[in-house]
Image 1 (tube, rainbow, N blue to C red):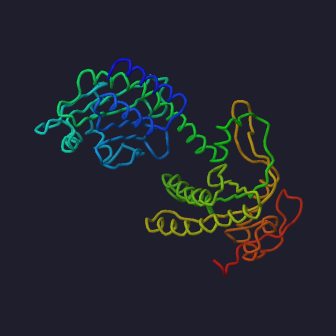
Image 2: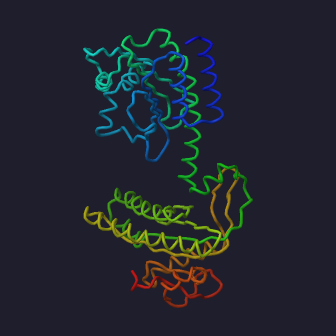
Image 3: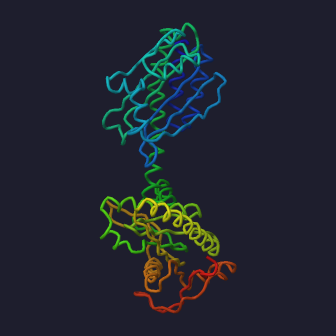
Length: 404
């Protein structure tokens, strides 16, 4: 590889990183160009930790030895169990604990590698191995994302030449920069969608961050909370409360998202969500599908928790439809992307009434009128009620118990 070729490739990596390119595509193109320029790569992996509620990080993989494998894997926490043990046996852990940025090992067939993973690479025909780490400055870290790891391998019997090693050292900082740029964008999306909701998160990332310009929309409103939550908190061990909330939130949010809804707020044991569609009947249909899904999830959850001798309960759910204002509300320093309006107050009142009428689900008069005919046929009236703070009494509905 000539020096000019190397500099042109490094410049290309930086440019593509700034303009945007998928990490797997970036790695593939870099490796293919290296091979074309005489650097005999067989395999390359790049790892970067992230800030995600489930995954610890992501790995991008390339190989040209004819073995099929996924170009992307998302790995879980390495803080306990076998994952922790595997991490502590890795070359990267050795580099981390000893402050080393580079580790090279020749893997002759008769060699006895000092790391188990290198023995696997040796048996797969790898003859030279180079691991590189590029650490970020303290102000450039985000959560656990404080560096980029990589390893580069060849099956060439003679291994990498010094010039080829120098080329990999020159390229890696540019690659790490491009990978980090992509990772930061993904983290921003993850955080926005996790803490604001999927649709609000996308709207905020799309530039809707100005206070005081909400959009008026028509939406199905979902408000649910746990039955007997106060009693559970008074009697259950304190360490059981958060797992309880997480289990029931997982069931609710999973059902809402599966049906196309957006969760806007988690308020202790309460959940506020919306369903929107060009046709209000379709939004109603989606909300009822989520409710049916949730019933099955709750049944399985109750069985599982009781088998483990842990507290279990049920949900109260109110459904309503109406016009609301959707957007940023708050101060210049602290905004919330949510819905406000009389319809939001009304759905919470409907849900609260579940306790009085002993029904897990109550549906407003407006929702029943907007629901598609086949869904409306499944509803039965539970009577006419005056809701606190709502100007007029209305008929409320639930699902026909004979159909459940």
